[in-house]
Image (tube, rainbow, N blue to C red):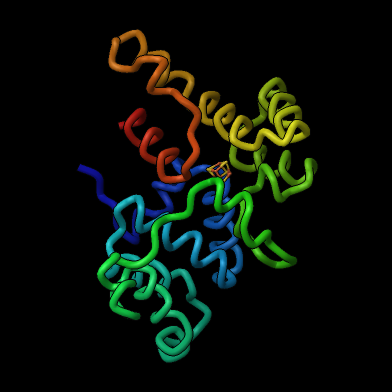
Amino acid sequence: GADISAKNVDALSSSFPLCMQHLHRSLRRDAHLKHFGRLQYTLFLKGIGLNLEECLIFWRTSFHKITDDTFNKEYRYNVRHSYGDVGGDSNRRGGGYSPFSCQKILTEHPPGPGEAHGCPYRHFNLENLTALLQQVGIADRSVLQGVKEDKEAQKFHMACNRVFEHVHKNEIKRAKDDGILTSAQLETIVHPNEYFKRSYLLKN
Ligand code: SF4
């Protein structure tokens, strides 16, 4: 089975959609993320199966410039709250918050300066989006051109799915040839956790 643990998040992040890769890269660069970035990323990590204990280890080790005391005072509670470990009865009964869908990420709380949450296909300008795609290894001109057209038409999901199909083209072909993947299973992805699940299944 999958080893979904704090120390494996770096390796797993190659199966993350661009929104979460951007959060991960920003976190590694700054050893910090602002509130909405932490929330979006924590809930995604919860959705891929990182348990609360591992999630706390992940944030504590990632925020390596601060003391334990600061971490415990300022950040620990919110992570526990996201998992339903603390908070009101309904939060606890419900197991905390649900991971955000693309729809929510695309439409609520657009990122401001210095914030890394949101959807890069929507919230980045074309130049920065292209640069980010190239940094994560997407150099194919026709894919980048397709993303540009999707973005101009405000079809952000289409851009994300286009990149998914490009990144996984060998695995998709093999799975189709083996008859273990039908076109119906390649319907448009509309949730970051679905992106991860499909990527992970195809690669493993
Ligand atoms: Fe993330 Fe959804 Fe945007 Fe893809 S379309 S980058 S999964 S928010």
